[in-house]
Length: 367
Image (tube, rainbow, N blue to C red):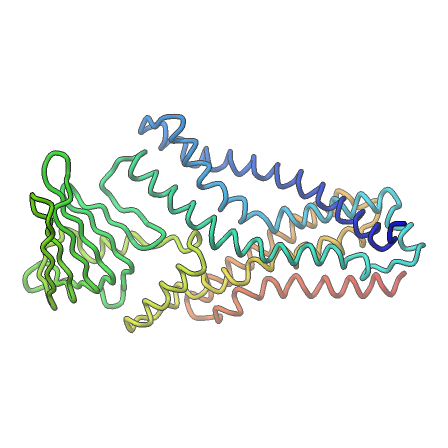
């Protein structure tokens, strides 16, 4: 004989997962269309092939879908629990002795797994895929020699026979950290030299750059490599510090590990990483949004009852939009030093917890 508690849990999870699959598929299609039309003019202008354009859109899609997960979760919760309310299934469970707190337990356990899944997706799927999409856009679709914001550093494609790759640009000191220079020669652009410098700065006296702690590798015609080390190495780069500052990292599409490494790089260079800290804390707090918004959706569906299905969907969307507005506002305030990075990242989650706990308490008292 089946355990009745497991039967109730199975019913709740089945209804929620069915709604989740439908809403997730819908948002995936919407995300695909948005990403496609966002860069469709660029793809068409550069006459990229269908397979190349499709690969670019699919590589960008995971970040777009994961970013929308809190909205997907709260709508799925409102729709699934709202349907159970309209069909009197929740009422029957109340009569059978089940309380709202008991009913939300299996859903809360499932949503807690979303925290792990979102962190994993942000760390190992969205960031790498977004980086590949950017590389694909510049190197194969645009085929241009201009700047590219990469996942492991600020990329600048030099004109002609040189390519520059920088790990970090420090606007306060006008220095570059972790600069790598690739030199090419010949009609086939064969790699002829590579220079790796720990840092680089503009030398105003000679109008060029000075590289520090440099490892130079020159590739000879016979394929052998001549390796040399220099404490300082003068080098002419046709880009100014202002040029490097235009190509800032897209921190939203970086993984937590990459962003943490960037913050450490700034600190070790004596720079203030204030502009990146809010994004780092958001990487830590965002996966919890699915849990807290999901629980809020559960309360909204129970509170509105049979007649509030459309209103519940509207309130769910409003709550999700409010979350993202609070997140964006907090990020901006943290970057200028008004809020702490921790508070700016976690305050939207707290704003979801308070009404959720309040509604659960009221529903408990009313039943």
